[in-house]
Image 1 (spheres, protein in one colour):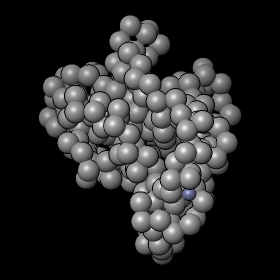
Image 2 (cartoon, protein in one colour):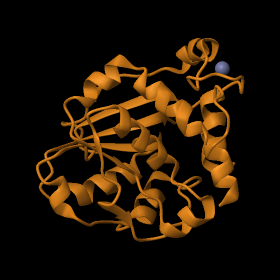
Image 3 (spheres, protein in one colour):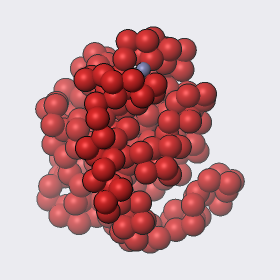
Image 4 (spheres, protein in one colour):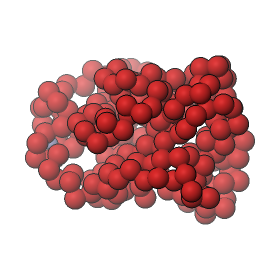
Length: 216
Ligand SMILES: [Zn+2]
């Protein structure tokens, strides 16, 4: 817990090079990140293997992007949420896209995992986005009820089985007829976000876009 708090009050640095920077991302690193960019809006409404309507992956999961996402998720570098949020909020295309949507839901982690790590890395970013855009954060709607094995290292088929029935929805009135941004950190086979969309789409939601920091 102490580590978590220390991480959050870490000085204002660029998350990629650790130099002091009040914007959490320096110009030099912002330029360096360009080569990993893959920020396209993909229409998924006719793709049978995708249970959502639109998709944006900001980066390719490579090089320094991969390195930083791993540190963010596993090495208690909670403060990196500031940098990743900045990247999203600096992007005019993504912010314009948000205007068609009402709420943002971070892909949840199981409460046991949350206790171990001290934070849900995706929720920290979603909260920051909601603070600075039209989107409303809904973090008590989609709940991960099953504490599953990690998805990494599993095949697409194993991932789908592993994540099956892992999520439930509470307070469903809050998402009725809404346009939803579902935020996750890494997109690999799509099993996790598909499973989330399956439970969300059983209720009367309007449409769902999946936004991820990087696509593997
Ligand atoms: Zn930098």
